[in-house]
Length: 447
Ligand SMILES: *Cc1c(COP(=O)(O)O)cnc(C)c1O
Image (cartoon, rainbow, N blue to C red; front, side, top):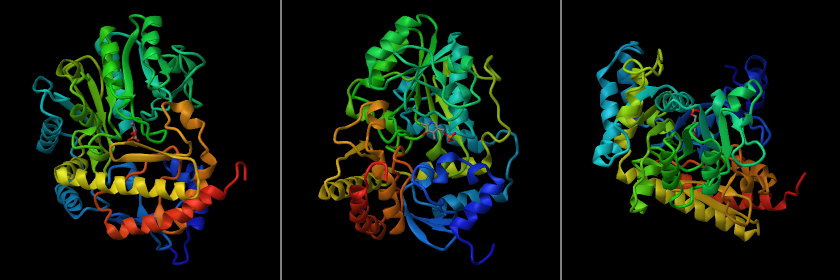
């Protein structure tokens, strides 16, 4: 590496050999402009770029770094596993221990009032939701899937469907390369609208295998479900012999020890029945690992016991399992209390800074996940999110970045805190906010 390298020169070099210079699109800074920061190391609440600049990080690898980056005990667990072999392509005792830990953390088996009986490990959240959908179709023998506009479940073909016009119509491809007949197997509905879900089941009677929903939407900014919404979706699905797939890839093990499902369980007296759940992000502790879990009678439909095929050369990879196990074990009550404190302090600080300069905004939150909506009223669905003053975000983002705070590079992303955000990190963020708020206030649409 040359000593005179810069983010700009790295970006130019990367773009010649990597499409867009990135291995996942949002990293390209497309919606905020400028060269992305090329990160060379991270520790605790901070990341360091190729120019040697440090930033307080509010991306946390999109969630996994819940304990802060490079937590010594997590790193040691991975190093220890690595010294015993990188991958065996065979069963390991550690996989069983992780599955047991997950079942226990989510309240035990379903008969005990918990969330999942069994767990299958995969490598990405995309694989987890893809597997859950195939399993739901294999179990019910039905073809269609319901999803919600603005919800992200990874990039498998069938889940890259966009809303057609009108309620309960078949989806349209949301990406080039997704054939229309595949997108048409997905029905895309407005979020937080139970009538839309009921109409879809009425219009496609006996043909819907599953409803897939983010436990709390957090890929269009954060947008929590109405109280009772997930429970009602479960009832509607079950009344029609369809399954509910709760996507906790982002929220699972992040908003509470037992995810958003756990948060809702503590808040309401009426527990709801989830058939399949997907996990990712935190469960891998920063390594490529995700999982699908659920009812044993449904899970037993997976190969080798059942007819639904699913496999993975690197599934249950020993390094990933070690990172995930250590991360979950270390994320205790105090960790979640700290995440809640950090998040709540930041939410107030961001809102105060924007109020001070008269920028209309709403802080949208779901547990410790939050995002800033540049609109005076809370959003309830994707249309509301799209109607915000999104043009205010890029100057806000860059003013923070200049002062050493790395926000997610899109207004459509959640902000991720870590338990390692200490007073020094928090003060740096809080000191930067008035500058960012001013930049957001001064920008004019289209400029
Ligand atoms: C990130 C995410 C996925 C996809 O996970 P990958 O590991 O990126 O494939 C799926 N669902 C939700 C809710 C996510 O946030």
